Amino acid sequence: MTYDVTVIGSGPGGYVAAIRCAQLGMKVAIIERYSVLGGTCLNVGCIPSKALLDSSEHYHNAAHHFKTHGIDINSPKVNMPQMIKRKTEVVMENNKGIEFLMKKNKIDVFNGHGSFVSKNRIKIENAEGSREIDTDKVIIATGSKPVMPANFNYDKKRVITSTEALKIEKVPGSMLIIGGGVIGLELGSVYARLGTKIHVVEFMDRILPTMDSDCSRELSKSLKNLGMEFHLRYGVTEVTPGKSKVKVKAKSRDDESKVLDWEVDYCLVAIGRRPYTDNLGLENVGIATDEKGRIQVDDHLQTAVPGIYAIGDVVRGAMLAHKAEEEGVFVAEYMSGQKPHINYRLIPGVVYTWPEVASAGYTEEELKAEGIPYKPGKFPFRALGRARASMDIDGMVKVLAHKDTDEILGVHIVGARAADMIAEGVALMEFRASAEDATRMSHAHPTYTEAFREACLAATANRPLHM
Image (cartoon, rainbow, N blue to C red; front, side, top):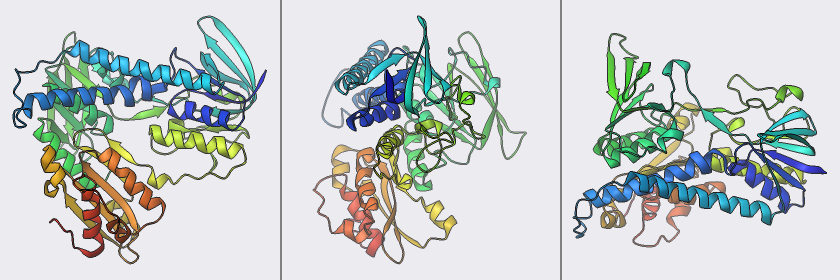
């Protein structure tokens, strides 16, 4: 049998691409090297981390906020094995859901490592042996792996990545996180809520260095109140794991004589991820990668070889599950003759700490660098009735509108439910709405989204109603 399209990798980009191809009438195969579908996101990334984030937030509220709400309970205790068990059950339910979707859409699933024999022939290898399938087109969706410098002495026991951090069954006394990006801050906040002393070492001058600086400042204040310590403009020079502890040294970027050292229970390395194309056989079909290991593609996500496409973390752009999904749908529809589009500027970035952080469009720094005239509007959650009612007063909404046309150019939110609120900003920017357009829309009261309307009022006419 020859398949119309074969997808290598079953993460969010891969399985969504497979479903959309099947919906469009193609005969589809999907290859997954592990025994379960879903890729990094579902198994050791987005889903399990959010399960632990929610569990740890429940514990933190019980320990610190229930009394204020008039709820008296005995001092809560962390049952870490149960917390991990629940996380695993959430993952398994999602695994089953994807299996169901594959069957529903008549997609053939092959477990094993897929690699190119030739442009139209794919080898699948597993413990039982190997086989080959023929295909007209291929979508590469093999995702990414954590970056791990050799001198960090990664042992999966004391020096860990996000994968191992999701399996710890005893609350650590201390943890050092290398990297102040999304992964490090999310997992750091999980354990900080549970009582772990967290140190974050970041090479740049602020956490979340790629997001709007106001978001960095707001989240930094909240996480410091949680007890997390940040060591900015420091680079880690030594990581030495032992049997029960790990020693870490870091040197100041500004003064090499300034050296910090720690002895902690775990060192979590969260300095980024690299495209995973190991043993994919790209050389057999003449596909090149760039200096960062990414597969080079054109504006239609097609590689230099006609009929072979690549999406998600293996190509340029942010390493986000929903970006990969958009690209999966894009490729499927392009192959079928449609004319899809993706506005990469409006793919939101989200940090699932509490408060949450969400951002889409231009940052203020980008507007300044590009010389685009703009007017900012901000509104603090502290002035929001809904936030006061729920005791979620940390954060703000920031709207950046064009100074001359009032078109919304960027939306940046730190606060409760920011991950959900950003969709309003994305929708308005997709349709090139003005800040005034947003102010003319009725927002239910009391809601968190009222802060978005107030920020738009501040941007368009400097007249927020509640501040």
